[in-house]
Image 1 (spheres, rainbow, N blue to C red):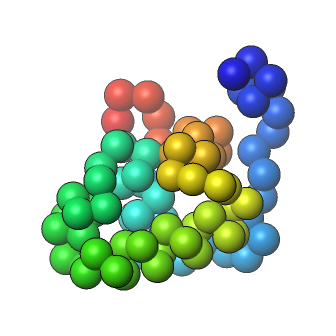
Image 2 (tube, helix red, strand yellow):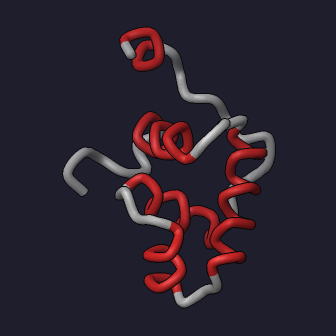
Length: 80
């Protein structure tokens, strides 16, 4: 954890879209795919598409790494 915390956050290979940003923040807050779909009024498959796109852009292997990136880049702060 210390090694991850000390390294600078990776930059996305292409810009994150506004909708991807919303999904990113929802993942960082711990919402499930179904909760994200309900909250953003999109289908479950659309949530999965956005997650796949985020993983590709960020080089993340899973939603935990997506959430870590959100915190590392200060898109979300602890307790928000």
